[in-house]
Image 1: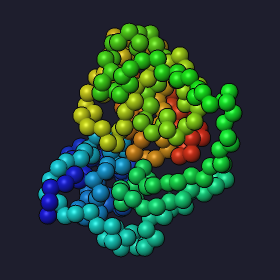
Image 2 (image 1 turned 90 degrees about the horizontal axis):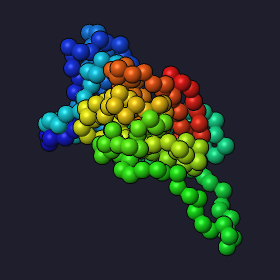
Image 3 (image 1 turned 90 degrees about the vertical axis):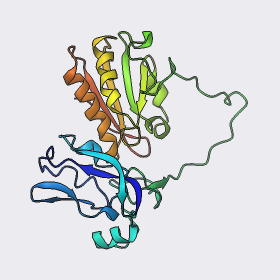
Length: 257
């Protein structure tokens, strides 16, 4: 055995709701005796797709001695041998090419290659890239001062890291005239500071609205939960909008929550 990252479930906090179970593509989490438990260490890839699903915050990632993640064991556990090549969740004009990579089948970590129309040769007058709508720096939530002038009475976009790369019109459609903070609810370390920063944006910087933009993969939902917790904890109340983006950049949902 070697020390590696693996899911830890606090049984005292767990209420047995089972919301974490479907978010684990490897089937590593099961409800046993009314509590969520790891079925086996070698079924858990340690990436934490289940983190954002637990309403009790009973799931964390720890470093401990554990049996190595075993893809073959996962296949046997799930009773399939397809290499985790799942069908798309919805019809698409061009089905993405999937390849299993690091992540052991986690929906947020599978490699996808999208077919795009061949780019037309750019004319001499069309070679200039569109202007950026970014109005500040830094943008990463760990780095931004929550009471910076660019947050004062601003409309704020809190976006998952992947959103701007997936969505071609991110700048013109959602960033224009807004301040930005980005974060990854799955991979960022030290996320306990994020809640305090968002509360400070609401109460001290007095932001006007917050738009949370996440990808459709399950692990992204943790960013919405974080924003909802901040709104609930803050003394001021601000409107909160959710924008959920598909893997090919289409808008799946957009609504005030």
